[in-house]
Amino acid sequence: MHPRFVILVISAVLIAPVGFAQDKNAPTLDELVSKNIEAKGGADALRALQSLTLTGKMLVQQGQIQLTYVQTKKRPGEVRTEATLQGMTQVEAYDGKEGWKISPFQGRKEPERMSADDVKSLMEDAEIDGPLVDWKARQSTVDYLGTEDVDGTLAHKLKVIRKNGDVNFVYLDPDHFLEIRILTQRIKHGAQVEVETDLGDYEKINGVFIPFSIETGRKGDPDKQKVVIDKAEGNVPVDDATFRFPTTASK
Image 1 (cartoon, rainbow, N blue to C red):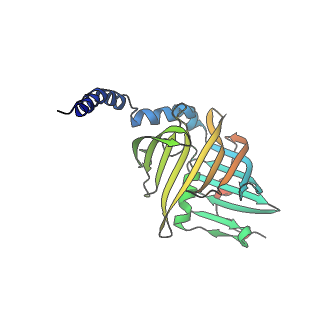
Image 2 (image 1 turned 135 degrees about the vertical axis):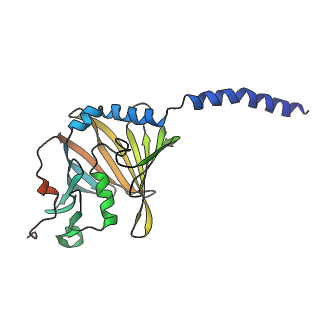
C-alpha cells in the first residue's frame, strides 16, 4: 500500500467521529422554532400583542428619496401600509379576505382591488409573529437545512413551504435566534420571483422584539427599499374599517 494512501485513510478514520459528533449536536427543527419564539419574547407575549403600529421612513432609489411610512397590523391577519411624499399617499391594505391599493405615484388616485398574486405578499406582511410561529396551525411545512453564510454570519437556515405554495427561506442569527434574512420564492403573474428581506435593529415593544430596520428587494438587485422604524406601538385600538376597501371613492 502506498504510504500517502495510508495517511489519507487514517485521516478519514480520525475525522469521521468528529463529523458525527457535530451532526449529533446540531439543533433540531423543534429546538430552533422554540428558541425563535423565546427570542421574540415568548409565546404569551406574542399572543398578547394583538395589534402593532409602526411609524418611520421609507428610503428608495438608494436613499435619494425619503417617504413617510406607517404600517398597522392587527390579528388575525389584517394590514395597512402607507407611504407619503409631497402630499400623495400610496396605500396597500388587506382585510383578511381581499387586498386593495391606491397608487397616486402611478397616476391612480382611486382605490383598486388587487389580484390574488399581489395579495400574497400582503398576507405575509400582516403576520406579527413571522413564518415560524404556529407553522403547523398554518398548514405549512418546515425543514431545517443546516447553516449558511449571511453577510459573514453563519445563520441557521429553515425552509418554510406555505399552504399556498410560497416558499420562505428563513435565516436565524446563531446567537439570538431572531430572523436576519427571509428569502421568499413565489409565482407572480406566471413567473417565479425571489424577494430578499433583511431584518435588524430589533427593539422590544409590549414584550415582543420587533425589527426596526427592514430592507427589501428582488434578489440580486442592489437598489433595495429600506424602511427605518422610529416609533412602534402595541395594542392600540384599530377599527377594522381601516383595512377594508373604501365604500366611497377618494376625492
